[in-house]
Amino acid sequence: MSATEAAADLRRAMADDAAEVDAALDTLLPAVEGPEARLFEAMRYATIGGGKKLRAFLVLEGAALFAVSRDAALRTAAAVEMLHAYSLVHDDLPAMDDDQLRRGKPTAHIAYDEATAILAGDALQAHAFFVLASDETHHDGWVRAELCRCLARAVGPRGMCGGQMLDMLAEQAGEAADEALVGRIQMLKT
Image 1: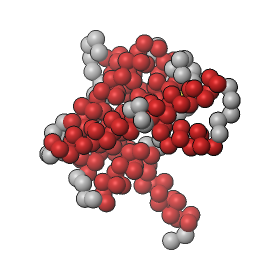
Image 2: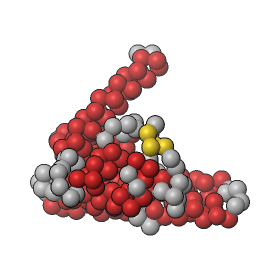
Image 3: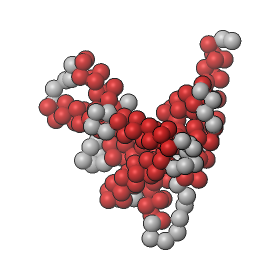
Image 4: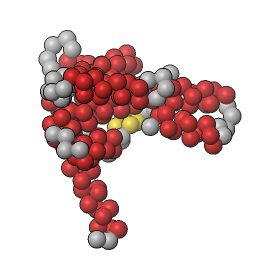
């Protein structure tokens, strides 16, 4: 197989997985009616469609290596995408990067409002852990707890949030970050 064919296969596999994850997200983040409808709409807006879903792809491929059921892997991949979307919603806020566009469409705080975007991000984070902790994700409670623990560490103060803080501090200092700091920020945020 040529490099071009391999690249095309990878793009197809990623697109197929992204579609499956979007379908899982559609189920896990249902459209609702009533007072919470706007919140769910904003959560869905930030999460479903668009983006490469690279993190979800890596979860699905890793799970396949260890013969994890596809349903469990999809729920886990969807939870990871919810956390990623939460981070993007918050990163786009005026207090952070103040971005106007994300994935070719208005950011959540532009499409809705700042307060709704904050709540949507917070709700996505909470719902991701709810999905991971649910019996449907895995029959073994220890596995569910370990999924929550590992993901919490990855996004917490010694992970993504810590990396964002370092990024903000470097930007506020107005100095070019050295290679070591850039590497640390990238490692933590990713």
